[in-house]
Image (cartoon, rainbow, N blue to C red):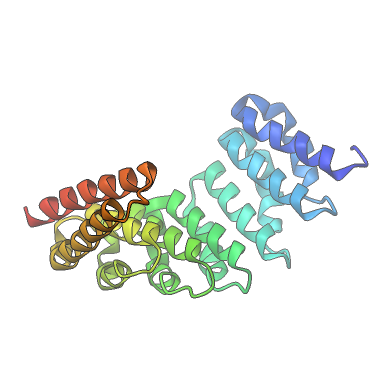
Length: 239
């Protein structure tokens, strides 16, 4: 009820962090879905989702929230509904649509939410494959690869796109693509040559860092960890 929306938002976020023990605040949080400030609305939806099944009284309002014009409202509501009900049928189509939103933050959040839903988000696989090609922001590509990995074996149709993502200019996208291939399992064994090429690239980066005299310990450690993890993935896929 505070006039300062920063204070309202802070209160809502805190209730979300408390989680299920904040179930008595569900009516207040549901009312906050009508706040005029978007960040308060998004935070209220997130908080209700973090409370989980005990927030089931908010499901009707969250369902209405899915119809809002603001795409971030819809994404927030979709994830909250899934966290409360574990029913992906209502949430996943909303998140699929959000993957082509004009706002890259919405696309990023949608991919992240689909990853949290995991295998039950398998109908989003074609849209996530397209999201691997997002040209505006690499975090969308990163979260698309991460989501495909969390969907797991059902994402086998994404194998060619994930192999292509091993060439992404951003190393974190390459790593999550490799990791996703590992989680898909033996059906991704066609990726072994590409994974080995990726290992060669990492080895070259390691040598270049070591020879340049500008080696940063953290950079080299990160590269070495990726080297080991990708090597383990290639061995796993060969089995």
